[in-house]
Length: 427
Image 1 (cartoon, one colour):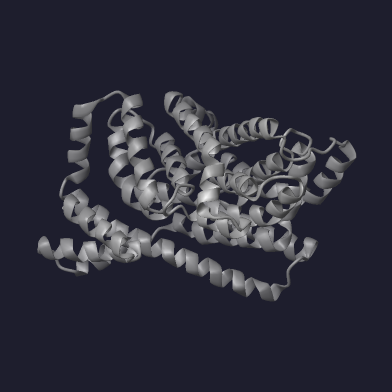
Image 2 (cartoon, helix red, strand yellow; image 1 turned 60 degrees about the horizontal axis):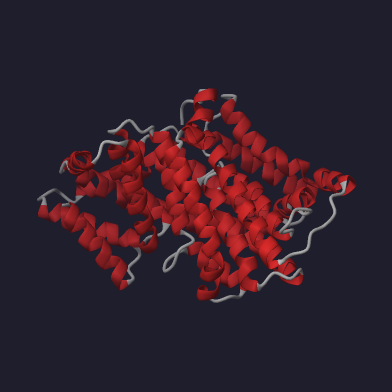
């Protein structure tokens, strides 16, 4: 069954069929070969999307839309400029810091690339950055947005593996900041070598003005993270609270978009949510077929025969996921691979919360690698550069991301200590 599924999946990718439909075709073929009624497929599909935590996805997507249109993202970027604009690398550091702010609210790497890139790349070009270098910084920093909570990939992992989404969110804070600092260090070194990018003098009055303009926006991540840690609400309820708050300050305080624009945001949110739900529905069918055919259990036994050392097992899994990221987008890769790989990791004592953050990060790197890296294509469009130019400019950042990956595998406590400290439970 595993080989049949993989054959159909890669054939679908090869002919350009959307992966969701490829999963559906695989489910039908597997049902026919197993002499299982097709009605089972419908039952399993409904079970896959009949989940309360899934409601967090459209709400967080809509929060990102409101942020981009309502002036929240721009004010956060202004604050980032006042905070780190004096450092070597100037606007490059601002772009990365802004991604840490923006990613801590939108949960989407693609939204981060589009929003921060549109604001930062023109200014960076004016300050001496080449177009590929400016685009590379804004594109690579988008991976922070899927690690620092809220995170749509972490929500998907929590649903398909029945892991606490709240704990996953808290676990993503420290590694997300580590990724940001690694990218800032890389930008500092490159700026020193190339003498690219002007710096600005640090001025306390400018920082104060930027803070006054952005403090309402900064309350948003406090609502999400503080509410979860404090046990006030679950991750799904936090998404609703974040949306209501972002709408309130955008419509009543900043007043940068009219209420009629909300309809377009709802349409875009519905389209993206529909794509995710269709993938999840068909992936649930595939996971059910693989489970009843003992595929996860067989994979656990085979991998354990190779090694039972957590470090080397995670290195093998990381290599596999990096290869998957070359040919598959993050969302389908997460819903397909997480149910198969999580039992392998937990069989050698790896915390599923830690593994979820690690998996999201590795597949996030896939968003930045050709030939199917979604963020690469968005970055090329925003920065008006070719794929070859952008990938060449991103090579030092790939090295930084891989170094962080090895650190996270070698020291899992970086990920697990905060959720253990706060003892966050539930979904």
